[in-house]
Image (cartoon, rainbow, N blue to C red; front, side, top):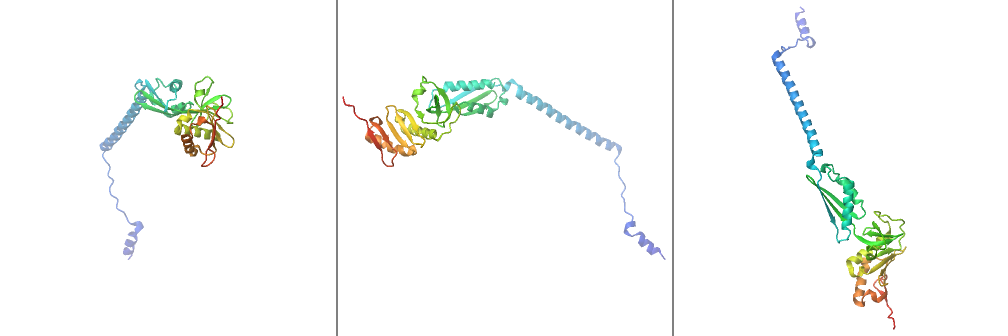
Length: 292
């Protein structure tokens, strides 16, 4: 009577028997062989890793401590256009810095190019430096000199370059003290070699001298002094006492007028002053001829 109901109840899902396949176990020898293979692979991997580490340590020691990469030759190239006459002095300063940094006999791989370049560019007379390694044992140093442009009178005589950087302090006996034009009328405080003078008056005066050197080199060689007042008016004095007044105007804008005047009216030495401050007009006062 209850057979069908019992079979239905036993076949209901929670009580239904599931088929379980027989568990297959590998033979002991197979499992042991597989374990041995894993151990061997691990030993080989550790051996390769250890060998690589050993090789790396020895290679590192060879690269950094071997005499093969020892600095044996140092080439110093002094670039200067035009020639300043200070090439030998600059080379001595470079050699001194190299000796102080103990570059000679150092391993070439240990030479810090950026650090050495900064040290060389800290020398007042050097504008730019480049350090290059040539393996296995050569170091090439190339430096560009600063171009001296004028002399500044400020509790002494100081030479400055085209960027307004103080190059050195000069004595009155130094040949450069009579070879380059002076810039006066500045108030820049105490000067030291290597410092850059922050002065608009100096910047304008250097720009005037650079313009004259490029466009009127014959006139540049005759310059004695450049004066720039507080209003930035520039006045040029030649060695014969001639006064050329440029005013506040950009000097390159007034150069054509000056060149035209000199070509038509004669050399600047024939005048007491030449005034370029007025647009489209050049005024001048001829020198008085001394009567016997």
